[in-house]
Each structure stands twice: as structure tokens, then as C-alpha cells.
Length: 253
Image 1 (cartoon, rainbow, N blue to C red):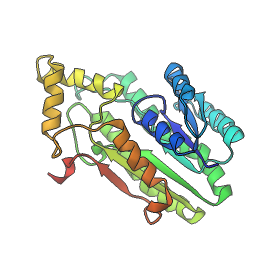
Image 2 (spheres, one colour):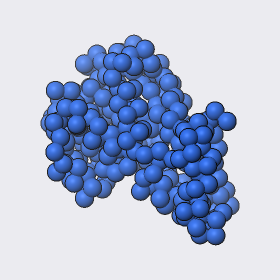
Image 3 (cartoon, one colour):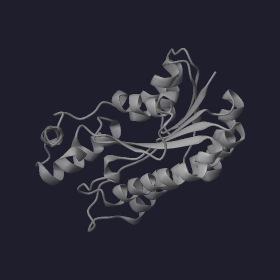
Image 4 (tube, rainbow, N blue to C red):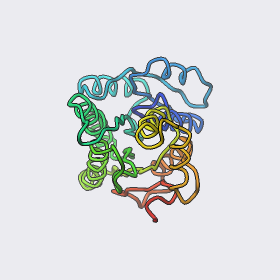
């Protein structure tokens, strides 16, 4: 049975991806700090198995240990979706050091640590597919997203560099670049935007975001999970080093 490791898999796009893979028979290791949500996923019924490993991706030893446990449980991972990330909005005049550190540690270092832990197993197997979570903010700028956008730009470059390094080993690396998706993470983002721009009216903030996209709405997590799944499958076998916008037409404008 093929196996998948998904970081940040307990909620949002990660959880949707867990459900997609597990429903298609993959064994899925979920690495996340949210134990309650992670164990709830484990309790759902899928044709594949799901296991939860509590993991803080900021800590390299914790990532290494969880990957080792996942490999012991399911064997060499065929697919990695490095999805874990956070977003805390602030202008250049409001940034706090602790937020800068957290965003960089999770969104960038966490991705590096995860790939570094999984890649040796894929090298030994001579094959593998890695999907990184970038963002539309690897391609465009947005209000309050200075540090977040910088990390996602870094993930985009990381995608290309890893594709070059790992390609000769039989490992493909691509990144998905979603625009706004309705998740617990973005709910907090839109509270900030509402306070800044809409007098605290969160619904107005969401409506304005929907109007900015050619499709007239924001995305649902499952829509991004479908693209992640595609990028990990043989049907995308001629793709590596790609940054794939799933952005409702944002970057077409």
C-alpha cells in the first residue's frame, strides 16, 4: 500500500488532503500539533489507514522522530505534502519579533526540516513525490503579509532548487499556490482585515475578497487537496519544479 506524510494535516487544506488520500486507499501519517483534530481524523472511516503523530515542525528532532515512526508504521513514504504553516498579519510598523520568528520557523524551516527527514527514504527507494505548500503570495503581495509572503516566496524558490537536486534521484518536487481558502487559519486573517479596512465587519471583508477573484468566491479546502493529489500522481509525471496557482483567476488580472 502506498503511503503519504502530511504536515499540518489536522485541519484546513491538510485535513482535506488527508481525507482525499485516505479515501483513495493511501496510508496517511498526519504530523501536526493539534492532537484533538488529528485524532478525530484517525477516527474517521477510510479505505486507507490514518495515524496521527504529534509534531512541532519547528523542532528538527521532533520532525525526524515522527518521520521515523511513520516509516516504521507504513514503510517508505511515496508522497510528502509539506503543508504546515501559520499566518499572522502585521504592517511593517507593527511586527513583533516573536511573530517573525514563528512564521519563519514554521513556514520555511519546518518545510526544510520535513523534506530533509523524508528525502533520504525516497533516495533509497529511487522514487518519490513531494508537494510543498506555497501561496498566491509567492506571486503577488498582500496587505499585512510581509513576513508570511517572504516565507512563501522562499518556499517557491525552495521548490525549484529541490527539484534540481532531487530530480536525478527519481524524486519530483512541485508547489501548490492557493489564493484565499476558507480555513480556520484564514478566519483569523479576515478578522484582522475587517478591523483594518471594514470597521470590524468580517462578512464585508470576505465579500470584498470574493469580488477580487474572477470566479467570484474563495476556495474550499477540498479544491486545493485535489490539486495536491494530482501533483503527487503519475498523471503529473512530466511536472517538477512547478509553482501551480490555484487562485480563482487572481494572477490572471
